[in-house]
Amino acid sequence: MSLLTLIFVLLFYTATATLVVGLAYKIRLYAKTPAPLRIPVTPAPITRWGVVARMFFEVTLFNSLFKANKWIWLFGWLFHAALLLVLLRHFRYFTDPVWGWIGAIQPYGKYAAFVMIFGLAGLWARRFLVDRVRYISSPSDHLMLALLIAIGLTGLGMKYVSHTDIVAVKAFFLGLMYFDWQPLPSDLFLVIHLSLVVLLMIIFPFSKLLHAPGLFFSPTRTQVDNAREKRHVVGL
Amino acid sequence: MLDFETPVLKQYPIIPLIQPGVMAHSKPYVAKPEIQGKIGFPEELVENWQEVAIKKMGELVSKSRALRVFLDSCVKCGACTDKCHYFLGTADPKNMPVARQDLFRDVYRRYFTFAGKYFPKLVGAKEMDKEMLDDWYSYFHQCSQCRRCSVYCPFGIDTAEISMAAREILDSVGVGQKYCNEIIGKAQTIGNNLGLREPALLDTLEGLEEDIEEETGVVVRLPLDQKNADILLVTPSADFFAEPHVDGLIGYAKVFHAAGLSWTLSSHASEAANFGMFIGSHENMQILAMRIRDAALDLGVKRIVFGECGHAWSVAYNFLNTLAGPFDFLDPNYPVPQHICEVTYDLIQRDLLTLDKSANDDKVLTFHDSCNIARG
Ligand code: HEM
Ligand code: HEM
Ligand code: SF4
Ligand code: SF4
Image (tube, rainbow over all chains, first blue to last red; front, side, top):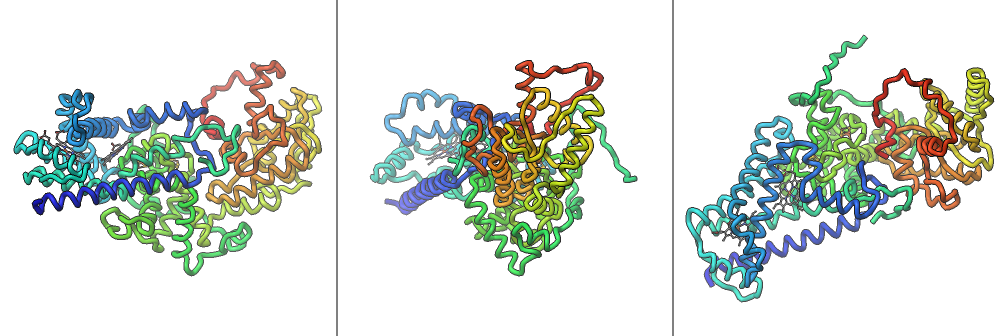
């Protein structure tokens, strides 16, 4: 096994463990922290199913964000929708045989990378151009966008500039999953792409990326408006 | 006269360019030592305040899912930056909801998160120093805890929750705010925010009875501490005192009278507003809520009805059941607590009130949810 392969085997195991354990820890903490005092934001649903509907639109359409600011919504929603497609498209490296519907979305996924980078660039531009957003941005906010754009660009680099052997890449990742390690191609774009992905996975549970699980535990959005009917003591 | 520049109201708001620091000077009067001591807080800034503040922060976060999730989840998207009236009116960037939260979050990060402990510059984590304490005192008191920002945040981050926690921490190190803390002390000992004692209340109510009789020729009673009445009315003490609030109370009395309902006010719980919420103090909020429960039990009533008050209704509607429940000794056919508007609406629906619509038909109305009836 080459040194590069060895390093990436170790990196990916470490990163996956950090991501999974870190997220599980955080989610457990969110779930176990009490929330007895009801603070659902009006107009709040009065049934569980109402909350499910509210959350569905928050997660899929960024409903509240749409009400708040059309530019952020446009860039942010395009970025996330495209990211989802890109990630689903990547499932082809981890499934064998490739699930049918993953195969079916491949053609659309091709454009997703461009949309994703467009959205990220729009969000980043706001951090420079809008004085209020500039004021609230810390270096990590800039770097997070830079990181995602760099992942996207190196991915595009592999696709349009300098191909990598994706059959070998797939073999490497399937090997990781079945503990039967295979060599990783040593193309520059791939190495950068994967290094940045490892970085993203490791910082996920320590950064604002916790907004993804956080949304599902946000009391103002997930609580049922029923404080008079039901007495909430620990508020789970 | 103060010289105000009143902006013209436009169809779309014009968002001001930020002017850092312009509101740093604005802060409420600090509570005197005896006010602080009376409601269980240190009398003045404690010596090891930094330590106490950080410890309190950890405690509050560990007991509140809202704080936990809100402190972690903000992505600094900026959607809330132009949603706070304090920012729109002052242009001070620390009045943008996210920046207000960041006064808290930056400290939280510094002491409680991996990134903030080891890479403070990178994530903007900051020490809890005197300068920060002063900023807290200024800017966490420039939040009316209206929760408007939480409507727009994609994660529902509610700056009010963070302001409340910050005020609780400020109180715990001994820098309280005079207005709320003095009032809470009065409500806990005398029964209401204005400090009106039973004889004064009786006197006021008698005066109102006379006024009503004079105006309408009808004898309408405003009973105080009447045992075994059906309804306990809990209303803000401003209703006993100030114009136009007192018109509200007169109205409630007329409604109860016309509908033939048996009701009473209480001298023990003569306050609906719960200022414990505004300083984020669970203990104080609970003490005030318990007075209402005690009064209801003592008087043997069947229902609890709240008069109009934005400082009252959020706590009453959302928290009373948790803080002072269960209310299984009351009539289960009515919500606890019920709002006076709900009572009146129900009576109108059942044709139990005869309304003279011409009495108010010269008025142009607009709805502004100042009393939190719609928001709950
Ligand atoms: C349940 C899944 C998720 C939901 C509902 C969600 C929702 C949101 C929303 C509403 C925003 C604010 C608007 C915006 O700036 O786009 C946001 C921002 C952001 N999200 Fe997500 N997100 C999710 C998952 C993810 C994941 C998996 C990543 C990254 C790998 C991510 C990365 C980001 C970043 C970097 C920002 C900040 C953008 C900026 O700097 O302006 N999100 N997310
Ligand atoms: C272990 C995880 C990952 C592996 C093995 C991986 C591998 C690859 C490979 C081999 C390509 C080239 C595709 C081609 O030549 O057709 C690619 C492209 C790309 N990757 Fe990744 N990647 C991973 C994670 C990610 C993540 C987390 C993101 C986004 C944040 C991302 C974004 C992209 C984009 C935008 C492209 C270009 C367009 C496309 O083919 O979809 N990748 N990736
Ligand atoms: S809750 Fe506070 S920060 Fe949010 S909009 Fe209201 S006053 Fe502003
Ligand atoms: S809208 Fe919410 S996530 Fe966005 S900056 Fe404001 S508080 Fe943070």
